[in-house]
Image (cartoon, rainbow, N blue to C red; front, side, top):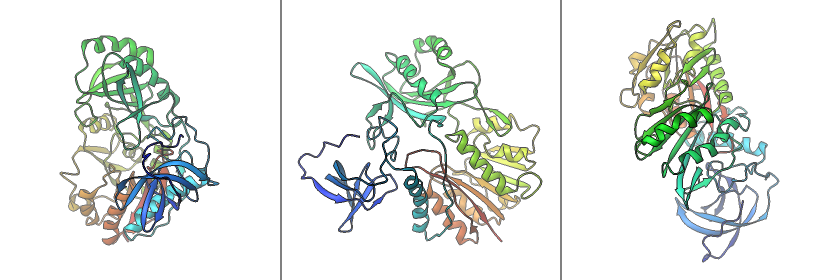
Length: 431
């Protein structure tokens, strides 16, 4: 990582880093005003130039590391420090895992919650099966990669130690295919059993050349399906398949599911297995525990299907009709029903939830604010909460605790390796 050469009019100053923040920045507390410095570690003395305001503090740019921490390690990726995909490749493993635990603890303490936080379950490098990249034509060539921190600039990546090798190998092929055909947009890549499921989001519709060239390109590149979202962003529309060579599928336990384009999946198979095991153990597995279960924000069935295979009666609720349809297509032999329902606009009422022995929920990053009050008032004896955002989880946990639920040990799961994201799973019981 090269020192930042910006803010040359500012006089450099030496500061000592006190702690690591939730975004992975080193934080120095100076006269009760935090200074945020990317890519530095607690205990390090660094030379910085102060920059713009951020909340009550200032962002600083690193000029030199004067005294290194013993927890500093050599990053695995040549792009680290430029690419915004990772925040903590420079942090040694024990300190890194402690930081991930601490992110959850800080979020809970801010809501007045004390909890037992278990050791982190962490996935190995080169295991991410799902990534989203940006692309743009610049200087006569196509740039494909992750955006920099707090910027729309794109780092043109040649490799990525986080993603599956099959996913990384596809990047230069997509770069060549897009060059001369489209100027900018985003690419979602999901590795499935049949090959890559690729979604391109761009301003316009795919032109005739793209449609004509897609079959040969996808066959040569191992792409099972190529889809398109017109508008430029993943939330702008429904993906339209340009070509499907083989319908992509994934396995949830023993069940193989044909997934729609741009489906929500856990980012790694290993992380999904850890979360699914936690959920199944929580509801009692085969032959015991809860018998009737609601699975909210169910996706394509990552938790619903293993529970149903174990003999549970499961009602899955999902906001996207295509994902509900994928789940329904494999549910015939199981005690599983699926419902398409937007839980923001139409959360399940307490009376609807009261018939279940347990509720499993895995909401998006914003959490389950619209649903959690009804869940708290339902009297369901067991709630299993899977979260990808400690802050929204802590808010929802406070609601459940205040209504009489007891919070169990928190299991962190680190699927977004070296980033500032961490997932967790936890059990709430009402006695």
